[in-house]
Amino acid sequence: MTKSGQLWGGRFTEKPNETFAEFNDSFRFDRRLFTADVRASIAHANGLAKAGVLSADESTAINGGLAKMLDEALSNTAYFDNSDAEDVHSFIEGELIADIGDAGRKLHTGRSRNDQVATAFRLWLRDETDAISAFVRGVQAALVNLASRHADAVLPGYTHLQRAQPVMFAHWCLAYFEMLKRDRERLADARGRINVMPLGSGALAGTGFPVDRQAVAEELGFDSISGNSLDAVSDRDFAVEFASACSLIMVHLSRLAEDLIIYCSTEFGFVTLSDAVSSGSSLMPQKKNPDALELLRGKAGRVFGHNISLLVMIKGLPLAYNKDMQEDKEAVFDTVDTVRISLRVAAIVLENATLNEERTSEAATKGYLNATELADYLVKKGLPFRTAHEIVGNAVLYAIGEGVELHELRLEQLQEFSPAIDSDVANALTLEAALAAKDVPGGTSPSRVNEALAAAKEYLNDQNKKFSHE
Image (cartoon, rainbow, N blue to C red; front, side, top):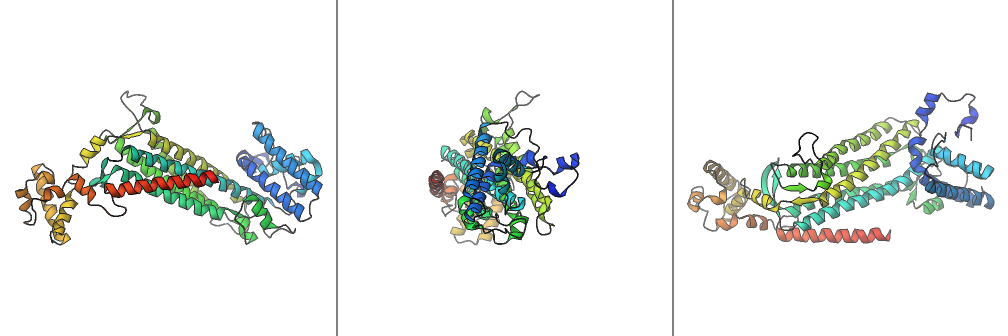
């Protein structure tokens, strides 16, 4: 170790330029890898000891010093202050040498910062992936709770932001539940590729010592070891994949936020947010703004930007390691922080949302949302669908001119458009009939939605049991 906390000073005769040192150093942000790096260093020391590279006394001293560091970092909030270390990895080695002497100088045997950094990063990201998945589950639970609080409520469904067909409100909630379910599947899939150990790859060519990489991987909980040393130290596709999965999480949170922002508006009046997740205007006393939702929508772009920055960072890098890759940390760190708080806020907003069931039910009967039901009615009477579609379109045009809904037209008025229409049409055009007709798996009939809601609750219970056992 050099006096400046560097791991590489022997070949150099001049001190680094101060501005370059500030530009080059990463300790201000990569210190959050401290715990992961110490864990990996303990496993590496154990691997060196089993390979006969370290004596039993040296291994004990190193492990004791590293464990002591972990304790100090947890108990002393100022532990990292005033250090001139280049990065967290040189900080750990410098502190270890200062504590246990020359034995600490042997820890880096057979290891490069290239595989050291990649290993600590993967360990840290593995844990964060699990944490984010748990937060996604929390939003799913909030959606299920909201659906259960309004289990019988009806909502106008929209396409092109125009009223289309009525749906159960719980069906709307479960649409986002399904999106988030896929998000958790993507996180789990990405975790599998994150959980590969690069340690033992050295700088680029592999280690020159007979370390049992598989044993070290098992100690650290990795599923497997990397198969190529060049690849292991020079790619961050696992970080890109993680950021991509997080980007899709934010897409879904942003869409959820947009729906609720619209539904909270005076013009819609479908949803009311409690004061706990709203804010006011500095000028207009009457305002109650859905700022929590708007921030969710806005922060999505921040995560998208990090995803793109990671792709751009690695797109033209030659093998093997390049310092460009230091830029991966801040992008991923901020992605994790942003997604974590966004998921927490989304769950809180949903728990503080109330549906105006009377308003949504009324809206579901206005705007000719039963037009498709009339077309289906005619099909069941033997007409081709395209013919029925044209007939109903003409009937809607007529109803608009009369200023009434389809179901408000008299039977004789409807029969002018088709003699196939009979007195049973009244029942076919009710809100209840429109909903009940969609009785297919994945449909919005009350019975199917109740089944889906029960399945969602079962899924959450299974996930909670799984989580409690991990």
